[in-house]
Image (tube, rainbow, N blue to C red; front, side, top):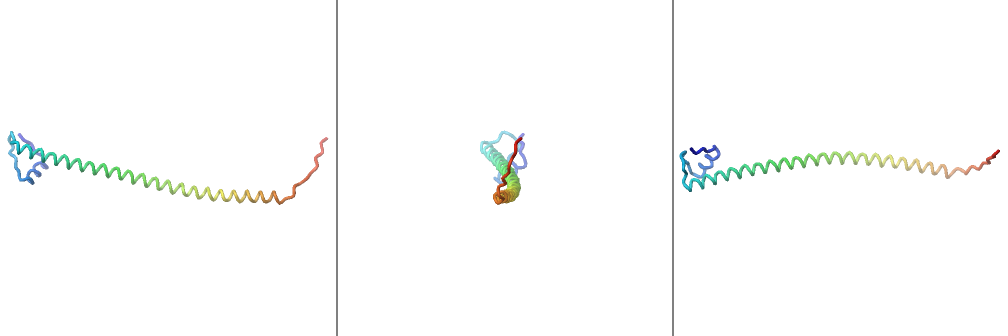
Length: 112
């Protein structure tokens, strides 16, 4: 008994062939059946390949979005640190200016 899937029956019909349900098949019928089954395997393989490619690209897009968000956070942190650095530099310059403009205090120390 020859059992054909709906897909195999459809493709055989496209080829213009109807196989009888009894065995054995002729060589031409076997070649056609193998050809149809190969087409089905190739179609499934192509679908699987497209699905894997889509999953891979979705993963890349997700990683790119995460990297972009992290990059934005780091840029903001850099700006905050640069602002803090400028403020600290101003304070340091003020302290240097204050200490350099005051006359040096001289004192006498008496040791007993």
